Length: 124
Image (cartoon, rainbow, N blue to C red; front, side, top):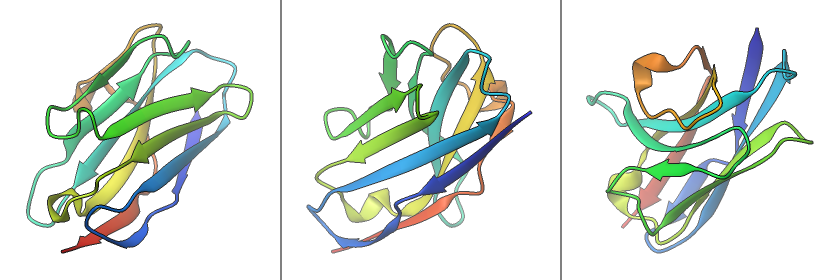
């Protein structure tokens, strides 16, 4: 079992940056692929980015490619999502997720563990 806690969300203006963190606890001795997803009001939860256990492979949604960067520190059991050039359409609750895997996982239904989410609001 892995527990995930996100932090770093907030209210920012368009063009600003934020860095989200996701701290993992519990069975952190396994190799997990980590992902970030987001859900806006009235919409389905969508994939944002993912990173393999070793950090060597990443994947991003087209809507965030070039603006968002996912990274991880396995010593601290923490995954980060750096978000630059934020847009109002990035407004959502952001969730991190984990699944035991050696590769990068992008499918929402493939993830086993989820955090409670952190709100990101981008004003125009």
